[in-house]
Image (tube, rainbow over all chains, first blue to last red; front, side):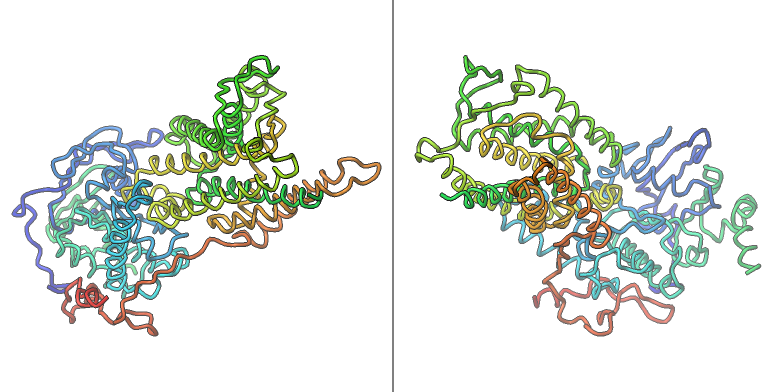
Length: 274
Length: 355
């Protein structure tokens, strides 16, 4: 399977959803950012979350990942109700995320950024540090080997001993994605992974996302680049004014007048003008 | 023993004691990012509790204090350390879950003032403003130590304790726990998104750091034989911050260097200089100004400190990787194009086996 020629399975045929939210509302000082958003993310597919600026996409990702509490509504990860859980508990259940503006752990090296990612490590316990040194050594070696391999895959191997704050913007994007992969998530939320990166890197990141799917992950990505969405995403959720406007394949949504009016028309016009 | 050795060993004591105190603050601030402006309060609790655990029942001594358990050294010292940790547990439960950085710092500085006022005014606790005095000198009677010989002896004991605590701290900071603490320092939101229960780790850091504070305080009361509120004015916290900033935040060796420069050379060494005739106390004031100037110079020209936090380089390499091009020989599986089929995302099994 190659990038650009993906065959997209039908979300309805795949049936089972792994992430579900219902009637999520969130307001900031009286301004409604989310106004009853509901959708399901199908398992082991790449789903795009699109919508105009201010539609509430990032707020939704923040709520799904536990970085923010919703005012109302429920979220389920698999069969578990994770509504308003703290983010570390949701992460431990297998949901990872990236941020719209890359948030590297700047004082740590690139390799250390990945080594932090495994969710539960014996070496994070004081008792184990002093009484189970062999276990720690073995676990650390395994983690270092795996992290090094991931860095090699993502083209960051040579930078492994650099402090993360020294990386360029594109490299930080790659680091953030590879850090999430190191945690071996079930669901990976990517907040605008292609924003601000050059076209060649867009191609590479798209490839990495397809690899995630092949490895069994479910990906939900906020994305404005409709070419990428068309090529790699199986399913699209359109959010507008804090509500789910439509769901389906992008080709179907292009024919939906509401979606065209709310978002696609705007994007198509912008691309034609440019 | 000549007076000069008495002075030298006094300086050695303060070097090692502030090394311990700086390591404690460093794990909280340098490693975890907790701005603990109440740190001196934990030092004081450790000092008082070490004192009252080692002293006999107050009885008719003329002092008023709790406990009076007559416990031997270092049992009383451990009680001092654990007491400071117990206070840290309470403080962390109340503050760390709700407050971040600047607000936490404000609450902690207030706590420091509250602790100071309580100890200064509530006489039955630790003898109020007079503080504790006549604290027994450890091993002094057993080893028949005089006042002069006790100083080098206890400076050596403090050095040994500092080295043991340095060993423990190094184990912690070099472990995955230390790495996770630094991740929380750099960005607690990201650490939490990676599955790290930030509060739990901050609590661990507070407990360990405060234990070091308590032990450092306990050693001060055992060395001097007395401890009262003038010994731990809330501003003293910033001297320990100066130690870790000058030494190098996030580096345990830097703590020793910081303690040497700030505490030993800038604070205690000038105290042994003869007073300027007609200007009693002038040296002390100049000294405080010099510390301020040194701190500003460091923050301006070398904010990473004299011994900066080290980059923890990996010893593990994939030998098959190119070293000059900056890109990997193993084609990233995801660098696919319309023409290039994707490769297996994990093509390194053979490389791994070869390690």
